[in-house]
Amino acid sequence: MSGSSGSGRVRWGILSTGGIAATFTEALLTMPDAEVAAVASRSAESAKRFAERYGIARAYGSWAELAADDGIDVVYVATPHSAHRAAAGLCLEAGRAVLCEKAFTLNSREARELVDLARERGLFLMEAMWTYCNPLIRRLVRLIREEGVIGEVRHVSAHFGVAREFPPSHRLRDPAQGGGALLDLGVYPVSLAHLFLGEPDEIQAWARLTPERVDGNTGIVLGYRSGAVATLSCSLTADTGAPALIAGTAGRVEIPDGFFHADRFTLHRPGLAPETVRLTDVHPDPDRSSMRHEAAEAMRCLRADLLESPVVPLDGTLAVMRTMDTVRSRIGVRYPEAD
Image (tube, rainbow, N blue to C red; front, side, top):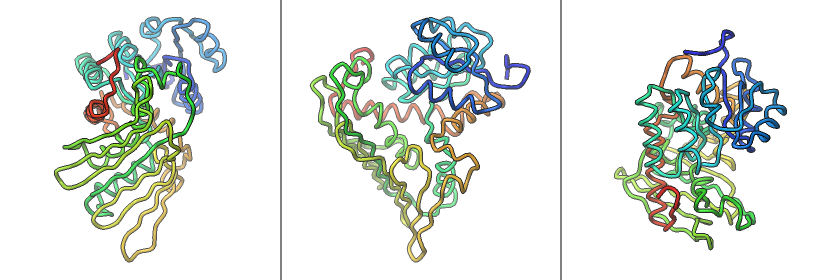
């Protein structure tokens, strides 16, 4: 890995100072092979406060200064997704590897631009889809894909909904910021369906839109030529929790509330007692948030000089973005800054 510190630690730059940036930074600070070297915000004062809070050596009042810092191996982009294209693109243009939060961008065109840029420059790029990096989900993928424990997958069901009153000024109600349930919450059910069934052949969706014309309550059906179906939902108005089910010709797997950071799943097969597998059964680190696992996967790839992660492949990220584009076209949601 070029440019890494003499200690062998991977040097991180944190771009943005919001809640998810704080959570990720706190995870990095528990990892002996990671160093949080710098932080940037559009506000110098915000960057300084964040740096003081976490003992970070360098604080910048612009994204460009962070991107130009040669003492950084990889930048974690934690802005709202409406700024992902600009922030990640700036870092890639400056020669920095990037781990970018999900939803990866506002649409598939922006996602393709970032992927093409990273591949042209020979730089590592990865979507921060922590679900895929969770050791329990990785075990489940092996059981289903490689060992065929539930036969051929025929149905994926996944939901993620909260019931909260967001004021009209909130970013989740602002089309210009990619507001609505789909990009914030729906990306998880859609990504889970893609993980076990791939990109769909047919997409149908319905949504109740807010007065600002973003989706408040959305249902999605994905169809596959194999005969498989995925039924998904996301909501800012209904407290559905976040359960998931993967059903096949020879059994099913149930993941209780919180599938996107799962700490257990239960395998059901005809004639056999239900079998529950817990995160602590498959990995000594019980961090169900998977922030550390996500960071570890990025650092593993950097050390191995990989340009993308086989766990969170870029083509998979692009496929998810294409699906969400189609969902938005079905429900009539447009993001004026990107569409």
